[in-house]
Length: 373
Image (tube, rainbow, N blue to C red):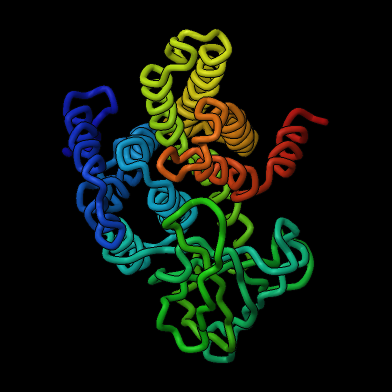
């Protein structure tokens, strides 16, 4: 694509159709990441001056949705989205030109994978109890000590964006962010974390034992880690669920095919009001989630995305995803338990969507505070 392409342009429409055709061929997960990046998927929300093909956030969401819908994969689009919003976005916003060259460009090209490591075993959403530390030595280097868990892309990542405490007191001034390459001495990767749902996405843990990086590895200012975190969360919460729209669309299409093809008591399932009402509710959930997320993406393209809107989007899309999946198994009855329907796998994905990037309770708290409650 040429630079500054609109989502409404013929060029982007043709590109999206090409992406759909590629995704429909069931790409090999071992090569799909680089192949998708080569088509430009990872760079859609990145400015041309930073090496991207800036179509915008709406274009990136449409692409992630299309990838999930055509491939039927949940883990791969989720992993890409996690890198795009929680790793690339902060580097783009806070990184200097050297960091863009060393870290951002390989991420956009798919020659490197990025991971954001903030969560700890005992801290979760409680930033004040974050215990990973970074201390500066007399030569200006930073020595990191601590542990992180639930790191999306952790087992395969080439670079980690790590949040650490550099001063006591408030999270507003006591945290800093660091870019740590995988091969840095003192960084040890743990086992892959087993999970239900999001098949193909890898979660891991890591330990930092006097992991030493140079001054140039700090992202943003010393004490500016909270700003890095909030920037990452603003975009991740808004758009991490873009692929689920594609998964819902695929599941709804398959459900329509099922009820039209299967008969009971001499009539197709699609002729029964209870089945039709269920499918209409599923269609409503998908439509509602899609329209809100796309509207949020347009706000981001207009540079007016705030935390209240991001949390509202995350909460609403995950809620509608779960409502959709409450209906889905009953379309199939006992057949829902068979892997080929994909129903139970999607249910697990929906449950998971209530917890990553901040739980639904956390999103509700942020929204309430934004309303002055």
